[in-house]
Image 1 (cartoon, rainbow, N blue to C red):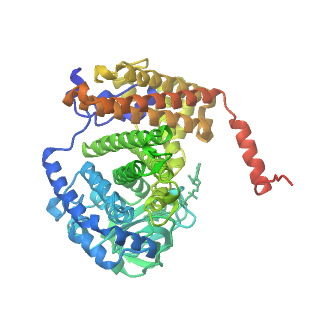
Image 2: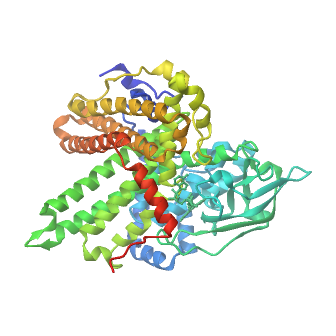
Image 3: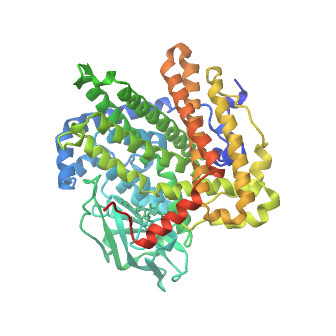
Length: 584
Ligand SMILES: Cc1cc2nc3c(=O)[nH]c(=O)nc-3n(C[C@H](O)[C@H](O)[C@H](O)COP(=O)(O)OP(=O)(O)OC[C@H]3O[C@@H](n4cnc5c(N)ncnc54)[C@H](O)[C@@H]3O)c2cc1C
């Protein structure tokens, strides 16, 4: 094993972006992160109290889902459990968990009820995360103890009727008064915890229509803030979602969060930092689905056998397991990046969100399928898991936007490397599509300092995984060649080329998730020895073979594809107003 194994993560480098340059930053992927013993002890106690509290409540959760609300006594009980103070430092009366520990807790709550995870998660992951990341000492001192106890519940207010993915186009405006205070007007929609919250992180435009965004801390008690009725939703129905309306809301000068004019960057940082909450929730949802599916497959008999004996059911159960293991691996890695103080993990965080949400969606779908007709009945919990899991592909950045972000961020760094075309490519990536997030800087330094283009050999992977390692080595190199080819072909027009951008993003997703799996299995092999890791080796093998097929397909389709016809057909159908054919 190489000495790199003991190295600390390289704080100014992104392993995800470097893949586009043909480089695997082993130092940031190996060894697989481990929760510290001290935190593990605290976590066990928290998980135990969650079990005691949530396990007997299955019937209540069903009722909350039907009624579309969590009663106030339930919210009070969550406060008593300390679930609103998970990531708040102990010095401010919170539990002081790391991002990894926090994610593990949300995983556990999600095994019982996704709406509970969302109420707690929206508070911590996005509602008050900005205060933790950008708040002044005075702001923290004033609000964190109340947020830790749940006396104040937090909400994150970015989305508006005319501004979803295009977060940079919000219209809520803030005018600065002569005394330094601000007056806010505007409307936010679909705000999780809106009806419960007393603490709102709000984004508004501060310098006229074309001006920049500024983040504010707004208390309900400031006045001029009203929340609409709870939205009637498809899933996570018990979690409270509403509009938040500002009418001449007067905000004291000291409630600006971070620097005025930096609101867009703050919003993206909050979303990036919050991704382990959503990822942890997805892992918990998958573990729940696997448990239900295994029970059903063992108990249900058809054709004189348990259905678990049929090949097509076995295929589903093993695929669900591979998805869950891979998601757990990538979410843990991203949690570790955040906890290590890495500068730039936005691509890896986006990869974990896309992979986690799509894995849960497919696992929930398969769990329901294994249950057959029972799966479709409200009497069983399959349909609620399917309904609840769908939102993860939409909120905190849709998966389409995040794929474009992954692809364009990686291509930006590759573009900067390709010096001969960087003058025409470099600039346009600085703001690829307002709303995609904050792109990295200083790529040239990283490229020259850290990487050498060409096939690299992974040195930290366990010898039992050598064959798998060579797949990632080969496809990292192929990704860099494909990126170079795309940049040469499209130059600055790459910004509008969504089909190939998605394909390189998908390759990066497979590479990064696969490398996290190899890292985890390597650590397990070193701890326990190969003879005790047969199943983990199988998971690494299955994931890698599947990833290889997908990556191969994505590389081939960069050249041979039906993209032009797909675009033309879509334009035709949109022009017709719908599907124009019939058989009569
Ligand atoms: C239950 C729920 C809770 C929510 N909680 C919060 C919250 O607490 N705070 C908050 O601020 N917001 C919240 N949201 C809003 C959520 O973040 C947005 O719904 C999300 O960002 C997508 O915006 P949109 O719904 O307007 O979709 P749109 O932006 O209109 O997108 C519609 C479709 O077009 C695609 N699309 C858009 N632009 C592009 C592009 N450039 N290229 C390719 N495809 C594109 C999208 O991927 C999507 O498939 C919540 C939403 C829901 C449903």
